[in-house]
Length: 212
Image (cartoon, rainbow, N blue to C red; front, side, top):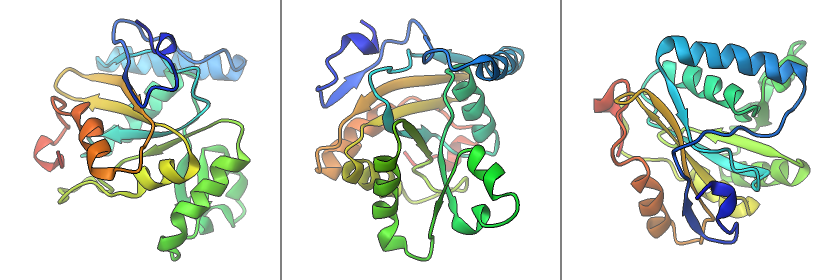
């Protein structure tokens, strides 16, 4: 059963791993980028698994394990393969200068980092203003060893009313997998257990740093 065959109202669903169908065609530029990303993945020995959930125009994409700068490279390559432009949170100062437009073009969603308590509202507004949005978040918050996952990704999805999609970067099998989706219920601990279940067997590049 593919991701599209599962009712979108289901709170938690797992995606089939036998295929890796991308999002719809987005133009010649996206196709050239997809070819380049596919070539990188193939030459570096990485595979992509799981169909892109076409019924989910907005989501928080959880990318883990995050233990190396290479995680970002591999995640961007997988996104290119899927014809998806990832959005990411960055300091608003990054978009204020002469290259601000370029930074936005590369996916930056400017936020006021000084207003940490207001970060959830800022991202809720950003989701509301967008017709489509895939916000990539590394829940560990750092490449170094951490005590656990940050909660921001969860409460952003909850406030914005968007699903959380689990993306697994497994260095043990050199696979980037779209593993499943969850509509946050508000019960953080119960939902986190479901989310982390998708990462139980995954290995990071520096696995001792991965906060399971």
